[in-house]
Length: 216
Image 1: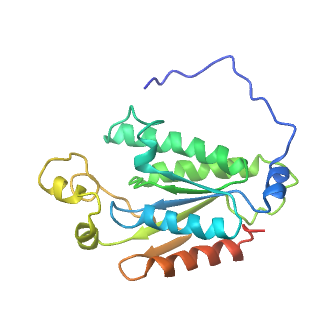
Image 2 (image 1 turned 60 degrees about the vertical axis):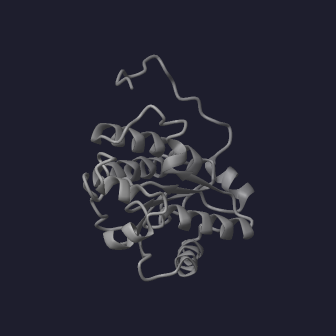
Image 3 (image 1 turned 90 degrees about the horizontal axis):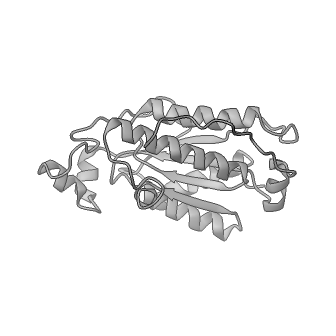
């Protein structure tokens, strides 16, 4: 990909405020960023939460790591630089969807703390620079969800067979084996899927969103 900055461009503002879109949807736009090792349960929890939100008539969308690499990020590999660009692009998509008033469920290994922090800062800036009508600044645009599971559990699950292939040397730069994972230091939520069921984790997520005022 090119690092050349675009020039001669100007942001064109909409006549509608973010609060207008959120009012129509009767919800608060937010990104829940699910991070964790492959096999920890990120996509599983996103799908379960999506179903629960849909049942409660909330507008939501899943951005899944593998799905995104079929299109938007199909030109990227898994080296450190490509991983960084992958998360940067997804962060921009999350920023747009959140501004549209959607509840975004982003499921990405996202192993580097700096990359996750960059997405948080992007969405925090959107909140600070946003409409004055959206006055509840206690609500966050970015909620980091650490889907925690030990390596042994992930290897045992191995739904895609990736751990087995990585241990055999067939996959390079595999997080947890040949590439590092920097665990979140202060996530909003920690869901230990080695100990909790999908239903328990989904209930915890829904309670967080309700209590935070994101669902009304």
